[in-house]
Amino acid sequence: MRIVPWRLARSVPLWLVLASMFVFLLAPIAAIFSASLQREQNFYYTLWPHDVSLVWYLSIPAKYWRALGISLLVAAIAASLTVGLGGLAALALVRGRLIGAATLNAFFRVPLQIPFVVTGVVFLQFYDRAADLGPDLLGSITGLVLAHLFVTLPYGVSAIAVILVRIGPRYEEAAQICGCSRSAAFFRVALPLLKPGVFPGFFYAFIVSFGDVPVAIFLTDENTTTLPVAIFQSLQFDFEPALLALSTVVIVLSVALILAVQKLAGLDMVVPSQRR
Amino acid sequence: MNPGASWGWLIWPPLLVAGLLLVLPQAGFIAMSLHPSLGYGRMGDAWTLVNYTHVLTDPAYLSAIGLTLGLSAAATAIGVVVGCPAAYLLARMHSRLASGFIAMLLATSFVTVVIKVLGLSLVLGREGIANHVLLSLHIVSAPVQLINNDLGVLIGLVQYTLPVQVLLLIGVIQTIPRRLEEAAEINGAHFLSMLRRVIWPLSRPGVVSAALVAFDMDMGAFTSAAMLGGGRVLTLPVLIERTIMIDVDYATGAALSTVLMVIVFALNLAAVPLLRTKRRPA
Image (cartoon, rainbow over all chains, first blue to last red; front, side):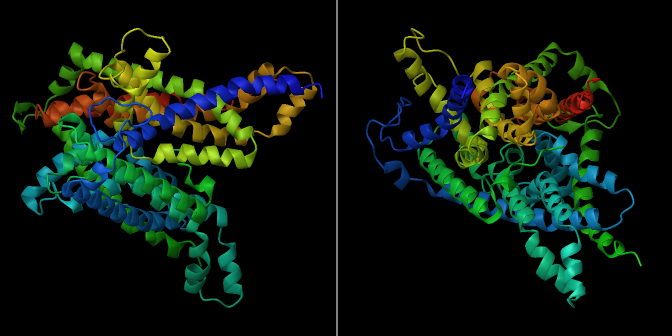
């Protein structure tokens, strides 16, 4: 065919761009992996460690395991609340004939326009003031969960609303015509169909909460330090090589989580929804 | 009977939570920026705009605003220049191959930012892999400073937003039917002129919206700017954190935060006309 040579030729630069992009994006991850296996931590890193050892994996201090536990706990609670409350909001926005639904929709998206660091500062001063009236939320797990919920709720609302619009009420109507009660039609027909919205909503909220530094850095103290904050502080003050090993563990866990969500909800569902 | 009525009340629990978490903290926060700071975290009772005039006239703050805008714009532009060809290739390649690449993109975009930045600091350090490669290829004769400066922050911002941009752009290109490209080809259009006259006009709103998402992320990026700037590159998010945590100056911190939000919001509003598809007269 006449077009074949230039079709091939035109794709060479595209492949070069793609390849260099992946080298750039994967380099930091490869570097962590390689450095975590290096016994001598002298900041001299090559593509492959010169003296391979698992010593850092075996000497991760307990306080970092604790930080990982806190991060996982906060992310799990925040993500559950996100899909729970987000699901309710999505149902009401899509199915309820609400007055001012467009305004309400915009209201739920407001947190997306606020930079994380601002959210952190805002909640810091809020908890500071609220401590005079009631519970001291500063440095508490509850306080961190609430701030993360503020940031992640929009993802829950939009991920579930998209699927609700797509499936429409017709499956439930069919179930009701076949003699199903209204609540059974919802719980046994609609809810399973909502999985492609619930899993990505939960997943995205979990990832955002789990990886957050700029909010948590204001709201945690030495007892509630999350893993990202611990890594951040370690790099700023004194470097702890065991964190390279723990980071590798976290990377492996997140890749496993991504693969699991892909299996459960399909690949295209995990692509972060456009933030507007 | 109104079938929607029974669903409507479900809005109350999420609305109350979202309302409490948005209105109460924000109101106190904006009020805080309107009181004078007495130092050591104490605030005066008088109402004043002095924090804003201070932020908007002090050359140090103005240069921070300029630096944040410049770095965000540069990172977004690199994302568009690299992301468009990459996304085009990914959207048009064999789908099984593409899904492998997309899984890798997802993996890189979902790995915790602070871990990626930790990795970048190993790659970009004085004794890091990047300098190693540059030296052994004789591109440079002495190690280059790639970290703790503007360049390091820029690389960090690209690392942060590029995968998101590419994922969004793949979606944009996938909505353009391949038949349109074939039609242009049959009519004798060269590949580049097909890109310019078929793909670009159809994808422009999507490209702009993906760029805006990345730009917003870059403007608010704290972790990469703080860690790769090494305390020397003061973008607005880094400056806000330092003002609050080190200077304990809540009033200035709040005013800086408001300025950052207003700039981001205004730029997003200004970009709205670019989000519409331009229709050329036939």
